[in-house]
Amino acid sequence: MKETTGKNNKLSLIGSISLGTGVMIGAGIFVLMGQIAELVGDLFPIAFIAGAIVVGFSSYSYVKFSNAFPSSGGVVKFLNKSYGPGTTTGVFSLLMYVSMVISESLVAGTFGAYTLRLFPESFAGYASILGILLLVTAYIVNILGNKVIGATATFTAIIKVAGIALLAIAGLIVSGFADITGNYIPKNTEALPKGFGFVAALALAILAYKGFTTITNQGGDIKNPHKNLGRSIVFSILICTVIYVALALAVAGGLSIPEIIEAKDYALAAAAKPIFGEWGSWITIAIAIVATVSGVIASVFSASRLLAMLSNMKQVPSLKKIGNFKNPALIFTVALAILLTVLFDLTRIASIGAIFYLIMDIAIHWGLFRHLKDEVKFKSIIPLIAIIMDIAVLTAFLYIKYMNDPLVLIVAAIGIILMIAAERFFMISHTDDEGNMPMEMETTSNKDNKT
Image (cartoon, rainbow, N blue to C red):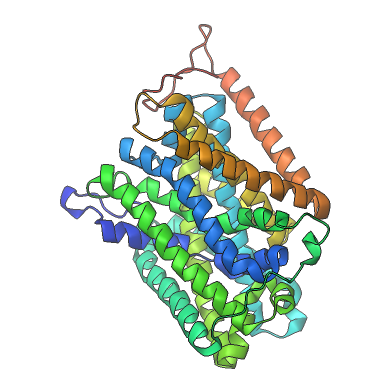
């Protein structure tokens, strides 16, 4: 979202951190905590620390990319710099796009799960309908224009970040620190080697931090971008880590692990009730509603802009005006998010999003390590460590899903195959007789014009 345009009205470092933290501390944390506890038991607060360590190594590549090539293109620009325009950049960019749409669906489903806590249990089956209504609302708000989005972004970011932080602090004060023994063996991982479930759970913990990638889109709007983009990423991750761990400890102090798992789609609201009483649960639900509404609106904006950018780069087919609808990228984005919300529950949505994101993340690190040694100064060992960590987490997560929910792997595999086939076909269709693919985005990569 473009916040500023004038030379003297650029985002400060603090402003960038505020926006980045507001995006990162989104609705995902309201549902991911229960899903992680389902895999690691009472170690789930530690999982957020371990997830932050993995993301810390991962962020190194994004920091180096942002410092070297600051732009509003963000991840797409980084992929283009690494692999050049063509099938590879297109596929990994689509993985990023689809993971963003999956996040929208996850947040919309979370909105439904928490909002229904205000109604009798007989309405429990209406979570998806509420999620769809939120996505339609997000479409309408985005159609109204950037001013409406920008007017609410800062306000809602302050409410949700401050609200979640206060919940975490108050929860710790009232309940104290929970005992973390590691003795609880979750049903989903009891047949696996010790520690295997913990590594797999990091795939979900990483989702709680992946919002830091949106900071890379601030390249055209921040003061001294070659330095401040990287700083903003680092500080945002540190702030989120402190809040997430404190919140996890507060939840662990308020509920037993079986209770957290049973209420995994609304774990924070369930934990607030025994700690603060009925009013505490209502406040938590209110914060969740604000976080989900603002999160979906911002995510729909970002994802549709990314798809439109890919269309302008000729990495995907041209998105022309459809009838009286002026923004087909927005229509497609919301329609896909609605489809996912209808077809999958929150656990499966989060799982597919984690798989797509980790694959794209590996591509970012490999692109820096393999193709940009002459253009960017970096320590080669760090992206290599990030790749090894990502592969370890992804492998463990895929194995657990194979054992417990193979449908997730089938859907993810079909999605990736369709993206590769469609992208390859499209690239061939607009390659001239000399093998060149004229693009509309300037690139200096040594891999230009490769498919």
